[in-house]
Length: 228
Image (cartoon, rainbow, N blue to C red):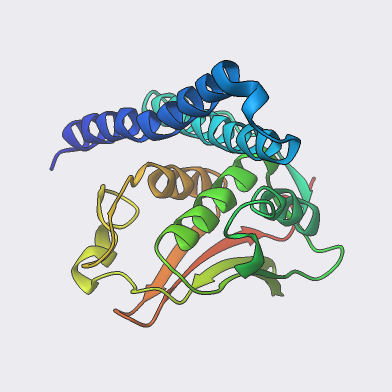
């Protein structure tokens, strides 16, 4: 598949992916408007939380499409600086705490650990990895970070069915199935994560075996370039 055809396919899939949260938002909001008095305060809050989560998901997908378009024409601008990873990881994980996946996400990030990256895009990339791990795994999901030399490694691991070996070489470059029993993945978030990290001299890697889980690891600079 050519780059142009792959990009067109990703855009088409992003449109398909947007329909799911949009349908949810329309359904829950319509129900609240028409039947407000039939629900308790707790039920209304649950509906509103679902609408909020799905609207954030839509916003992330739109941002990913825009960033891919900017990258295609060489206009992707990064806001690099020191980022407190503990704070950013907490920000991302908190989005899941009120949902069905909140209890199975574990975090192991040293206090005060920082990396040189674009905070908004790092959080978006991490959110994408956590969402994928929750989607394709029914078990625990782990988010961890550690320093290795001049780099910081941020990983997201799950205990799901894993990725078929034939798909691993293309996991960051083309849309396709996550695994033989998993639903088709969008591919947009992983492609963008790879491009954004490479643009700042960082990287992302994946380790996976069928029925043995998957680990995605982002390698970020621990600090910015030295000034002369």
